[in-house]
Length: 330
Ligand code: NAI
Image 1: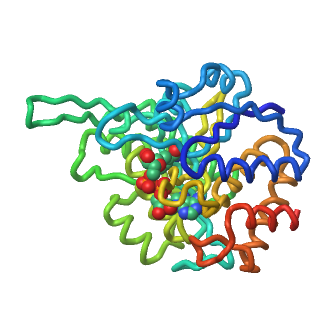
Image 2: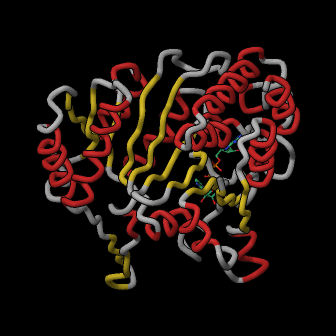
C-alpha cells in the first residue's frame, strides 16, 4: 500500500525515522510518499506544505503525520487544523492505556477519547470587535454533534466497551454545549446496549486525576477533547505515549498527540513510542493487525525491561538506541 508520510517540525524527523525503520523490519510493504510541511518548511519556502501533499493524501486516503509547529497568537493557522478541516476528518480517536514499566500515577487506565475535530472554537472564527475587545465564535452544529456521538457509540459497540460519557459545560453554555448534549442523548437511545452518561468538563478533570478507571469512552467537543487528551496522556506517563487517528469517511491521518517538542529537538532525545503506536493503529486498520500486535508487544517489552528507555521516563537511551532495541525485539 501507499501512504503519505509528513515528518513535520522539531522531533518529527527523528521519530518518523523510527517508524520507517520499523515498517521495513515488519515487512509491511508500505511505500511512503514523503512531504515536507510545517514552520521550518514555511521559513525556507514561504509555503506551509509541499505542493502535491493534499492530492497525495486524497489519493492514498492515509497519512502518518509528525508534529507541526504553530506560531502562538499570530502568524499562520495550524496545519493540523487545516488538514482536519480540508479532509473532514471529523473524529479524533485517542486511546489512553497504562503501559507496564512506565512510571505513572495509575496502572489501570484504559479509556478512549473521541474528540470532535471540525468545529467548536477551533473553527478559528475570531475578530476584533473594537481595538480592546476580541470575539471568538464557538460553533456547534447538530449534524457534527450527531456524527461524533454516533461514531463514539459505534466504536464502543465494535470494541466491546460498555460506557460512553459525553463531556460538556451545558450548565453555562446552554445553547452550544446544550445542543451537543441534547444530540448525544438522542443518539444514545439508538444504543440501548451501551450505558450513556454525561459529565461537566471541570468535574471530569477532577475525576480523571482521582479515579480514571471509572471512564471508558469519552466523547467531547473539540477544545475540551484537546485539553483532556493531554491530561490523560499525563495519567499514563506523558505525551510520549499518546497516539491518535484523525478519521474521516475517506481519509485517516494518524499522528501522535504531542507537538514538535522544540526543547529536545535534534538531540536524539525524543520518545518515538506515541508515533509508533499511531503507526500500529494504521497497521491494524489496514489488515495488518498481526504486525500491529507484534509492534505493540515489542514496544511494551522494551519499555518494561527498562534498559533502553528514553529520558522522559527516566531512561538514558536516545531515540536511535530505543528504536534499535525495538527492532531487535521484532
Ligand atoms: P509539545 O507536545 O511539543 O511538548 C510538551 C512537552 O512534552 C515538552 O517538554 C516536550 O519535550 C515533551 N514531549 C513531547 N513529545 C515528546 C516525546 N515524543 N518524547 C519526549 N518528550 C516529549 O508541546 P508544546 O511545547 O506546547 O508545543 C510545541 C509546538 O508543537 C507548538 O508549535 C505547537 O503548536 C505544536 N503542536 C503540534 C501538534 C501536532 O502537530 N499534532 C500538537 C501539539 C502541539
